[in-house]
Length: 210
Image (cartoon, rainbow, N blue to C red):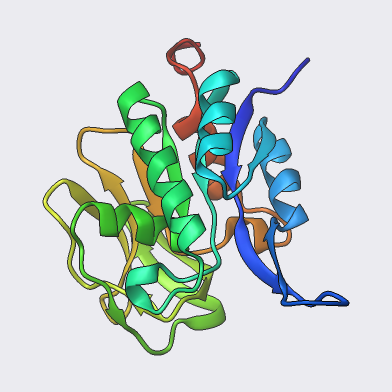
């Protein structure tokens, strides 16, 4: 059976080369392909080039959009303007088509920034194990971010927070947009809670009814 496609954005990395300046490379942790396969999907890596990204996203039968981690937003000391532009265009296209979006770490920051949430520097959020309280109970996740928010926009409902009040997960009140600040692809083994979140978010109506 062919697994449904999920469009996956990539981080920008600077890599040295023999002559001239560094190469600006798109990069994706291999763990994302394994995680999405475990959830029942196939990863479609998307380059940080707006025209190509939109052509792939609108021209192929993608189930939804995954905004991955890495690179701060340009508004918060970032260094990858091409990624900001690409993810903004993809998010806009997804919202027009009512396709589901999951934002992870930086990806959740994209959702927050789009909805007018102001991020601030936070401390104590670089950890392989951090306790969060969610509407589903308390659990331990990882955390690798230096910016965050303690408040949210009216349309962006916070459903998980850290002990210091930093928002760790959001869900849009009327659109299929979800954000989490932890990296589910880095957990070994993958957490069933995270796999379930991806399955339910990217499921079709027919699959949900089955």
